[in-house]
Length: 510
Image 1 (tube, helix red, strand yellow):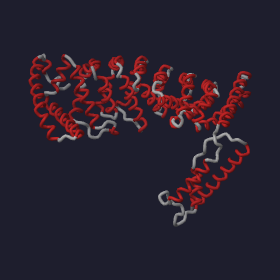
Image 2: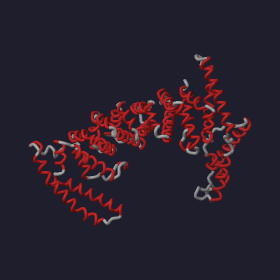
Image 3: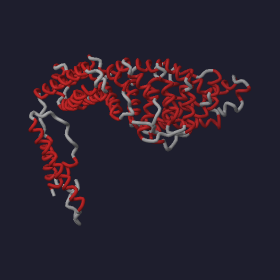
Image 4: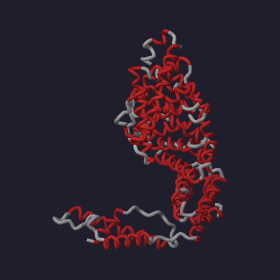
């Protein structure tokens, strides 16, 4: 029974990463041994599948004793450790072979530029050594040695190789070398590698390679994904790299990638994630996005979700990333004007009316677009496009079932109240009068709702601070009553300034 469990584990275990052997014979023996073990495991598994016994002989994980579990783990760990240990000599040998094959391929291409069949063998050998070099990612402590051996410039040169198979293979290797989990194992090695990559313009080279990759080819589509992963790894180690990535053209490429027509895919999702990362806490990239007409691009991509819900969880995440990008961009003042001219307010208002999943994101965007003194134009325009008749129903009643729970009840109420508060601060003239008149409708029901929300969050605050609920109500009741008296005394004055047309029901329907 124990042997069958071990065989099954070996059969299901994924293949190990390739490691360069110290001797060819040892490598052949290891391969044959591995094949033999898999054949035995496969035969055993097939036998078990063909002839099940009335009482199962294979135990589930819950039925395995601690002693058996320990023995299995020990067996697997021993089997995994049979590969060659990566040391300084191994790394030097791998790097030397890489340099030799890279030089040979370069010479053959120069010598026979019009005869691919003459340099194809050297290209295959170069691709093989790139795959073999992936073992270097298992030894981050030796990254300093890699830098000293000057292998980084040679690797980055291959990003511009005429054969995209070579450039994609190089990207895959760099992605593994820069994996954050691996780099965290050696701070010194990570710092040395990062400095070398940035010194030799990795970001510019990656973007140039992105421009020529054809995502209809699976291998090149994987290359795009791995390229974005490299940039994400670098930005996670150094946040200031986001600015450099924007300067080197990544932001422009991401915008163009979002506009590509076709079915939704993983790279489109990743592109939206990377754009969100580049815009987060980075005013230079936000400004650059606006100068590239990025606000219009984001609005165009979001327009699809005005009347359609995302078809999958991944597409929903993509939509949320676009909303987050728009919110980040609106924190730069010039982009608010671009949002206004691009009819962003109209799109967000329509999303609120359609009651699709995009309604949650549109609330956030409106909050960002209308907040602060620079939100004045957007606030007045929102009243002009009859936004009051859209926002106040959400103020009066928070939706119980928030689709996909993107916004909690508290977040929903916060955004709605913030939008109304921004309009109260920024609206002037007739727009302000129309807004104030909303609070006088139906026997001041919106004022009642405002008080309801006020006491709701006052009690939450009291609970957090450990104060009794009753004391909160008593000590604030007089202040609230005075506020209501002041509001009622102000309303006749405001209404007295209205023209006859303003006192009609037209504003009540706004």
